[in-house]
Amino acid sequence: MELRELLLGAALSFTLSMSGAQAAKELKLATSAPLGTPWVNHVEAIAHKISLNSNGAISAKLFHAGQLGTEPVMVQKTIRGRIDILGSSMTAFSTVVPEMALMGVPFLWDSYAQIDCAMDKHLTPVFEPLFEKKGFKFLQWNELGWIHTFGKKPFLAPGDVKGVKVRAAPAKYSVNFWQGMGANGVVLPLAETPSALQTGMVEGGTLPAMTYVAMGMGKLAPHLTLSAHLHQSGALVMSMRTWKKLSKNEQDSITNALVPVQGLREEVRSMAKDMLAGFQENGGQVHKLTSEQREEWKTAVLPLREQLVSSIGGQAQEVWPKILEAKKACML
Image (cartoon, rainbow, N blue to C red):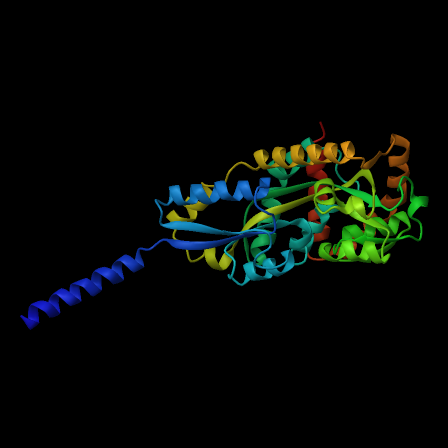
């Protein structure tokens, strides 16, 4: 009797250990975007497909709205494998993949169609090895849209910002833009920008239109100028530490779950357009540059382009001509 119970116990222990070994692998998927936004909807769709493709062997738990830290912090956690999948901005990734800053060179891009063509048809294989070298498996591009300028007064010409203290994003292309415009760029994290506007530390800055509206910046700096002087992309990546632990079938379950990024782009751009229209309907002051004004901005900023490219480091000097070639190939 004791032998029978011993054998049954051993069999039960073996069964439990086998079921534990076959339990679903749970991946941490992080983003700074809040629920209900196109970015969260996009990664949730990917997470659902990962589960389906792997027959439930892999699941992805979403951490939204920066629950796992600021974007730069999450980038570092992904390198270390503490976050498995991350969707983040060009600004954040450029802190470790400096060549990403080249995508934000002021007045580089002419249209969304040109940007999409360049990234999808030409630049993905250029950036994939750069990300891998820093500990990321590049999955696909992300999208934030055009970056515009805002201020407590209208910014319509370089003379309007000459000597004015303005918030610069923690990225070389943002500092370079304000330097060309003659402004006094003060590098600040996004979270510190509202208080800096309130105290008068800065008089304006640059942001995507939807971020400007969503954060209520219009109450602090009511003039938004649609400068579209640079484009803010981003990427969806996976920690190489996590990626290398997966089997080939598991890796395929993830790459085959990637939802086409064009849908995300269209949602983000449509959302920005709608939010901008709502801002104007509620009395927001939006300014459009004339072609002459835009040329004046470009004339002020373009002489510093070579300096910017040289300052970025990494393989920027080799990557920059490839970006220009991609732009030329995608001129529509």
